[in-house]
Image 1 (cartoon, rainbow, N blue to C red):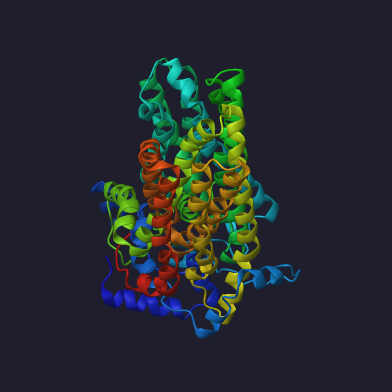
Image 2: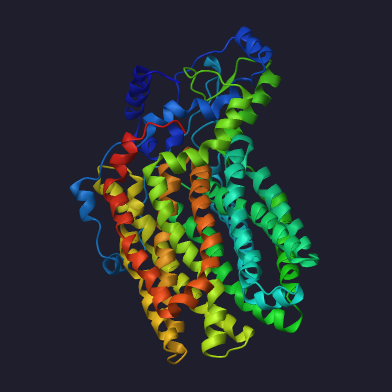
Length: 576
């Protein structure tokens, strides 16, 4: 990779750019250089790709220099007001904006292929607002369907066990948990592949794969095959959870990304909560196998719409394709993508692919920030699926409700989600713009996190409220209402943290979200399996209290990242 002096020069040149260039890391340009025909021929003989094949890895040094190294000023800290005061300000019709991002442009005289101009309509950030929101809407729809499929089977576990003559409750719950294990494995290769080959082909192919295995789930002849088919569904469905976030980052600048994230994430939040309601009634009326068919039909329609109506949004991939086209049209094999750092060593295709596939795990275990926030959300996500698995046990056992009626309990989580989403949507972008202006126009990803600190205190309330009211079998409305703070808290922490990762690791947003998803999904796959035995041993009250105490112990994580995240990122010297 580049030497330390080269990094210093790159960093110095970047600081001379406009403030907008600091905000949008796409703006950084390497010094133009011409790659000779001879060098290109040597690379091909050695089994290496042409220059644009290396743009992802070649940016590592530049990305290190681009990283925001400033800390929030006292003025920006003062903008961290209470949620109530900022909600009242959010009602203002005056919309504040940050300067538009600067794009690297064409310089054919020096052999550099870039965008035609700052207003190039082919750049995803320059798409019309209607086109951006349409693509985001399609993403939200498929992002609704995949987690919908993950939890729709939860209330039907007893029917599944009866069909396959299974008496082991833990194994009967495996079809729900194993789906999330697929969520953990899929992003490890789907996300980095989207950074190499493009978002559109990966998200379309992966979701088609998801739909195909839903047919297998509906026709599974045994419990073991159902478990395997559910794992494969999770594998394909994971793309919308990680690649989808990267597409949002491709389409929207920082000052507009919060609301776009809200639309995209609505599906992730609503899907798992509405699915058990539908699944319970479907299982009671036409049979549990039909929960797969009613998922397959709309999901397939959405995937077809994405394949036909959506498009590629990865900035680097678009310029790489443009470079290949111009090489042929102009007969200039020396042309290179504007995203290539010519000072970086040339890597083989195999090394590029290997680095890409290992990047999510390197991010997870090498970055204290990624590991810390992933651990925090992993616990909350695991508790969510533990609730999905144990709510039927609690309400059918203590309140003697039917499976269909029990499904209505999940709507209390949905109410909490909508409250959390509304607050995030109203505040996130406005907070970022206000704090950026107070910080001398310099944006820091940590500016996404102030509200997360408040929501971290709301999250544990549910475990004590819901747990002890259900344990003592008080009126059913009390534990049902007790689930609302959980919905508010999980959305209020998850949304800012996910937006933070996208902004902090912009070039590798898909890999950062993959790392985030891996730990979250592994915990969500296995923690629910411990739920029935834990509640049997400790009781519903103390079992939930144990989870509540763990949630309280994890509260400092968002605060630490907010206060010290910029300093930690400055010291991160790893080559992603």
